[in-house]
Image (cartoon, rainbow, N blue to C red):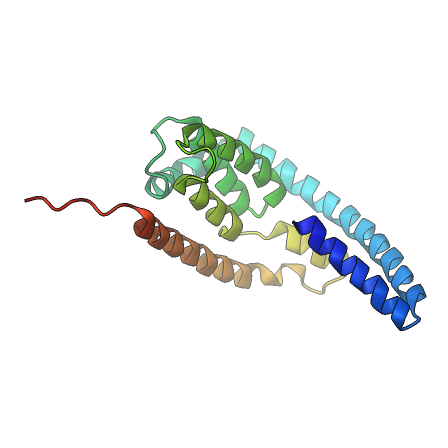
Length: 199
């Protein structure tokens, strides 16, 4: 579906440019966009490699394991339907740890593995389970202590203080994560069957 949306935008852009007799500027903008994309990617690679290396050091030093242990009660509360020692819990905690450190690219493979494990527990394979919906909500809105990707982009565009967004990003992601959890809980309650009255 997203591919069709982008195709629509591209076709409409060229049609409008052709009607206005300005196809050359659209072509130039496409080349400029491609050039800027490559430049931004090179800037991101250096920062992401650095933080991935830092994360590997943190993993070898046991810091990620300690962070995962700290997250364990939260994960058990958010995912009560997952059995205690199921592999999905480990992938979820790794995904959350990487997101907290602003390493979205490192979090993605863990999120995919967690979804694959959750699908094994899913009784209805044609619909996402409540645990899968919760993981998606948390992965999308995750609390971020260090927004490394945004800092890298700001550095690439010569920001005077690329790290000044750390505080506002933390506040924004706390709000978004809190909202995601509340909506997820509300949706779970609205979808769960009402228990029969005892009597």
